[in-house]
Image 1 (tube, one colour):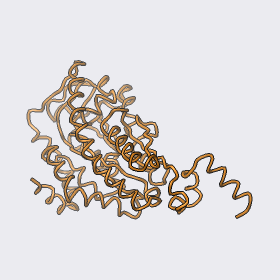
Image 2: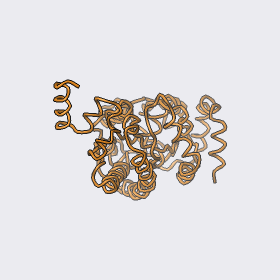
Image 3: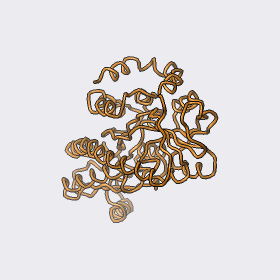
Image 4: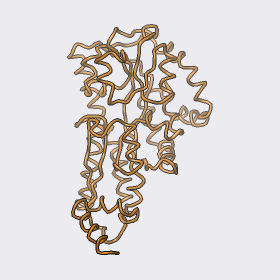
Length: 340
């Protein structure tokens, strides 16, 4: 190695340590000489500080830091500091960030096998979803992400996101007829656009980071999401009507950059998997409390929380979505439905 190259490498050590050196050589992170160097895992989430998914990943980071005597830690960038979920996936794929908590709705276009979870009214309720994701099916689908050679991701765990419901700025949606003609933001997945169109609304695919301003300016009339997102990302301040359609129960997933993963030792990989699994249940406990707090806050603000008389018309309306996307997942759907 030339003197200039040695000097450059020393400069990189002073400037950025292991992260900078990792950019020089894909295998350098795994070098025994750097085994004790500090590694800061950059994590992204669209939700604000204190949100269950944010807190669960931060807790994972604290456990990592303790178990490795400070050698590995997590730096959280919450509240869309690094962009929306699509951007977070792309950044994780190239190794620009190390951890991203994203919806299966956003990851579905990258890993088609996950789209089975995006079918409307797939799960009977959130308890059914949890049973499925905690068992063999959940493990199998995590492996689908990890083993996809083109994805560049490692799936660590599932996280709860409750049931998704419709909310809007215009009027109470009490029946499926009330949805007709409303421009409703959905996650950028063709399945969700088709779903909203089947329900009579106009599905508008849009990044989560754009939703609040779109509601404010009338670019969309409403959106669909869980109660904590509706309240704690302040959508409830402009969209006063929240209807409990529970049309989707879509889990979320914590993924890690494959480039970073491959640079970890086997022991460190085992720690990531262990603490990831613990984060799955940690986040669930946090979620239950947050959902209750969100409902109370929305009611206190005078927002209308609307129960639909019957979900049957909504379920019937999305049959074309099942006809279009369901057949390829027929075996998995049967297995999911069989979980008691």
